[in-house]
Image 1 (tube, rainbow, N blue to C red):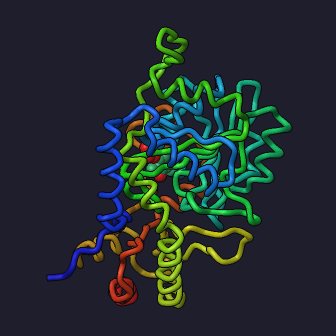
Image 2: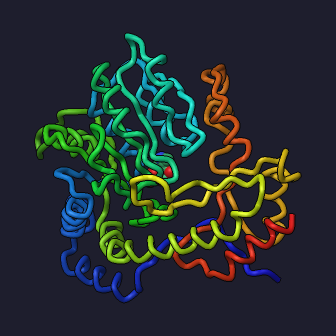
Length: 368
Ligand SMILES: *Cc1c(COP(=O)(O)O)cnc(C)c1O
């Protein structure tokens, strides 16, 4: 019997540290609605991310939905097809039309050179994704957005802890969304945050997560219940202390994979070394070029599965080919995104993954 290796495992703080936080919650008898844990977590995030404003949510998806609402968008939003479906759902749920732009081969983020040809009088925003924690070309996107007066939103669900040119990735765009879901590099069980520099958005963002309520007798907007509770905030506070350490271990695992797989012809590894950014090593995606390897991505997926190693075809199918969206949005030419989606496989990576497990995974790949 093999030991099962999952694609990810949540980071867990020492139990006693969480129990200490629970005692505080029990003493306060305050479980949600801007409790002490919530407010402390918000403050710690602001200083960690070096930003002026952050608003916490029950999850990343509703945070993104609220961001779109708060920016009063209409018409078309240019976005990437190579993402988790949450990104597209948030656009469509707001009555907007997603316009899909192809991605770049080197880091799978939206291809900034293909954006301008998709802009027309209906375009109101760009919603880009720092996929796998790789930063989009933030400088060029900023220029395009400014030139055409578009809002710029980042789905930074994968990118907590990433920096560019010594700055936090959160400091780019009009609003960035982070997800603190259990499977992400940093988790608060479930949770999410919006980060922004325009303080005038804060009031609306707080209303939108609390039924559009401003005060005891003032219901000013249509809104969700999307507030972060005290237990999640407490988990976030505990995990934040270990984030740096976790990222170091993820880096070590990435290096082990890189070393071991570097001589596998036909297997492309994401280059996390070359650019002027600090990675968070959130994922370890490989591309399997079957014309060189002699085996397909799906064959490798199955082989690993038969050895109790659980990988993910992350992101396959492409959003534009999903059952949900292909009829409406499938008629687009996205050669790079198609190519990547058909060949990509994300290998297990998490802070408690053993070196020996990495070796076992690599040995199976090499023996294909
Ligand atoms: C996880 C994820 C989301 C959604 O975040 P939740 O906290 O799970 O709601 C959105 N976009 C991307 C790219 C994600 O990976």
